[in-house]
Amino acid sequence: MLIIGAKGFAKEVLEVCHQNNELKDLAFYDDVNEEVKGLLFDKFPILKTPEQVKDYFSKYGPNFTIGIGDPHLREMMSDKFTALGGKLTSTVSYRAQIGSYDVHIGDGCNVLCNSTISNSVNIGKGGLIYYHCIIAHDVTLGDYVQISPRTTLLGRITVGDHTNIGANAIILPDITVGSNVVIGAGAIVTKDLPDNTVVVGIPARVIKQR
Image 1 (tube, rainbow, N blue to C red):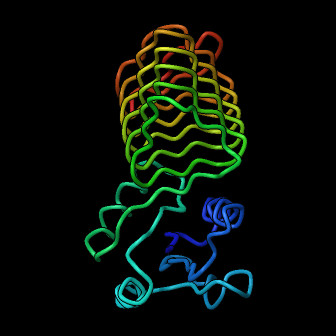
Image 2 (cartoon, one colour; image 1 turned 30 degrees about the vertical axis):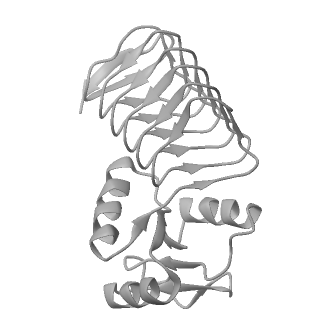
């Protein structure tokens, strides 16, 4: 597995791989941070060029996942490394609790430990489900949605693409959240939210357009 990124969230993805005993041939990619080079934690190679990536895919297989949090950057990196011959792949901690019926987790999702995903849940491509999240029944998430720690999504909720839901936020049942929305930490969403908005507070209110 190649993890795109070698700082921040990439270390969270590393822990999922460690928990799942999936460290064989693991490597990272970071061509942005000059101080990140050589071996991460004195163990895992850090690639720097597309040529190194192609060589890695040729030797160890095409699987890669995104170790970056921002939803739009995640999509950009997915497109970039797919074009280099990679296959976007999910990392799901075995310590996450996943429903047994009608659950779909799209390619390239990162599901961290102690998150709970109930039955009849559909998570789109490139989703990020952080620690201690609760996603209840009949929830649909679009592509590249970020669910921050201890967020709760109650039943029958739909969330659009590229939406970022802050830590400890709660979305009440039967709510539709648009695409490219930012929901602030601790907000409680009690009504539908349109595309391209930033909302905060209890109850959540729109404070600006994106």
